[in-house]
Image (tube, rainbow, N blue to C red; front, side, top):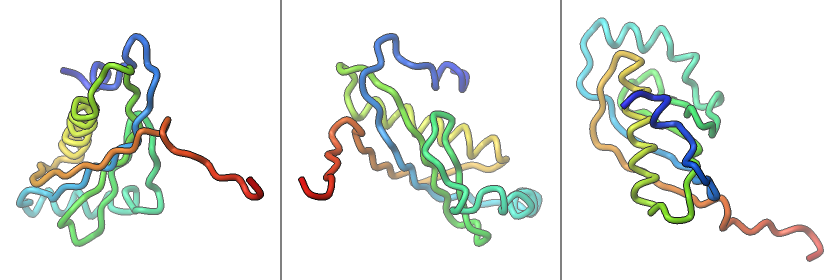
Length: 121
């Protein structure tokens, strides 16, 4: 499955989930460490965004990473399936950086269920 297939909106997208996937880098070789350290500024937490493509952030310690993304879903899709799609995106993003992963843990929020409290109401 390609990244564009994973990211493709379901035919009748009605919900959007905000998902945070946390994981650890698998043991890294010297070349992998050097490559990740050279790119660390581009993956600083202050650059993190929730987008459909997702954003990978990590610290120079290279122990763990965080992937943030928005995943559209149909009303019928189960949250577990949506999280699975986000984790697949996270794995692809980490591998694109030249690393591997372990110990993924994810948290999702259905943005349609968030209630905005306005002052004075």
